[in-house]
Amino acid sequence: MAAMNIVDFQNCFFFVLLSLFSLLCYSLFFRKPKEPRLHYDLPPSPPTLPIIGHLHLLLSVLVHRSLQTLSTKYGSILYLRVFSFPVALVSSASIAYEIFREHDVNISSRGFPPTDDSLFAGSFSFTSAPYGDYWKFMKKLLVTNLLGPQALERSRGFRADELDLFYENLLDKAMKKESVDICVEALKLSNNSICKMIMGRSCSEENGEAERVRALATQLDGLTKKILLANMLRAGFKKLVVSLFRKEMMDVSSRFDELLERILVEHEDKLDMHHQGTDLVDALLAACRDKNAEYKISRNHIKSFFADLLFASTDTFVQTTQWTVAEIINNPNVLERLRGEIDSVVGKARLIQETDLPNLPYLQAVVKEGLRLHPPGPLFARFSQEGCRIGGFYVPEKTTLMINAYAVMRDSDSWEDPDEFKPERFLASSRSEQEKERREQAIKYIAFGSGRRSCPGENLAYIFLGTAIGVMVQGFEWRIKEEKVNMEEANVGLSLTMAYPLKVTPVPRTLVPLTQNPLNRSS
Ligand code: HEM
Image 1 (cartoon, rainbow, N blue to C red):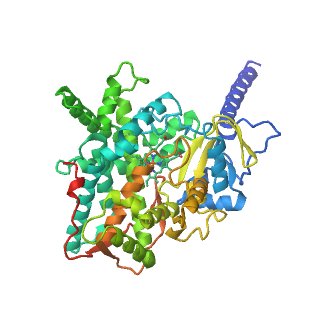
Image 2 (image 1 turned 180 degrees about the vertical axis):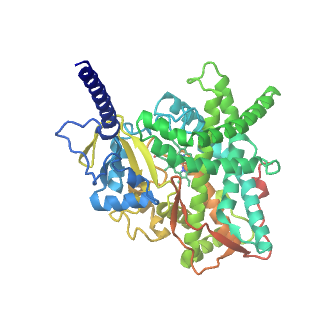
Image 3 (image 1 turned 90 degrees about the vertical axis):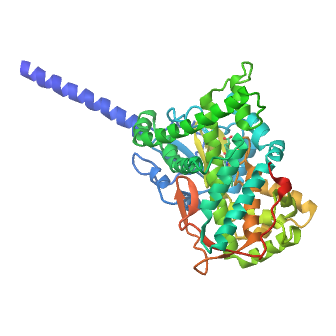
């Protein structure tokens, strides 16, 4: 009897353990997110795999493409599940317009809980901050001191210096008949320009500082997809998965920290010497010291903000430049028309400058078309605070909205010949058409997102892209080894990049180098 009791007790204990384990598995893997009330229809959902749901779809090599194919088959708004994490996938221009027009406040957070204490995607991050006081405070500082029209006017000289260097560097390579990796040159231009604009000086090439910043920006890129996917897991699992790349994340974070601490101290030393600082770092340090500031920020907030800006501005510019130049090379008619416009507006003696851009509508159209076909961030995320109706379906609260900008901007219901490179589509023939075009594009052109959380760097991006591409077209012929550039895509992190990086050999168009613009220089 006693022996039986022991067996019973062991069985019972085993059974309880098994039940607890099953319950744990069920809640981790199988439990569905809270279902909305029955009279609401969820968007259609493609077949799922056991446990992981639709995770495999997000792991595909060209995720924006496989999601685009999925939406063609099942619908322009889909309900996906990654384990138990709900995702609404948006793939058409009309649904994208509806969510930004009718639900903008509701979806103005990204909904990603901070990942660790890392400076990047951590609790200090601006980009992943919820829509609230901290975000509003930093956005105001950002517009006033870096990205608003007046701030951009103040920093014009910095960009002119860097554009001159970009041209000189290409000319030097052309003279030596060396080939150019477009990504490498574009990365130097954007990093140096943005660093100068944020902290008043570029990173030094001599002591390797610039190289370190460029390497960090590239590494950040590789981490994004891992962070995004980890955020879709339940807390316990997220911890486990993050631990797999925590070392890499903290390594990038601490190297950033070291570099940025030095920059902050440098600015503080200047302030102590009664130097009136005017750049973004000065403004952030002043806010940090201000006891009456609307929001109390710390040194970590400043550092994290810098990391966010560097990440947001670098790869986006590099990839768009590369794709757009490739399209121009592959479309000789576009090249001819573009060059004709630049030669007639700017001439063949002086280098293009950013004040020329408003007079170069075709160049602007080429840049827009490059971004439409090859958005560097093909997917971006938002989060529904409350349940809402989208496209006739019910999207429950706390659902991640994944917007496939790539699919939206190739949606054949909204774009004629959506896969063709046709800059003319962005040219309006008359003023009244311009207004109509502007309204139509607000619906279907989302390279910079839309609404409150849309990209605050849009104007700066157009300046960077317009001038860099302008210089390349105005100053050089570009030779490639093959007949056409191979336009195959690849994903690095979440960025859309070229599978075969663009390498071209520049040949100067004029015997005499183009004169640069001394009046625009910063000193
Ligand atoms: C080709 C260039 C660029 C592209 C295509 C691009 C695209 C985007 C997109 C799609 C978003 C998400 C928008 C949304 O959720 O609606 C975004 C956010 C952001 N971008 Fe850009 N961007 C570019 C350049 C820049 C530059 C130059 C800066 C600043 C120096 C910048 C700073 C930011 C920031 C801070 C955010 C986060 C905004 C927030 O969460 O409130 N971007 N960008």
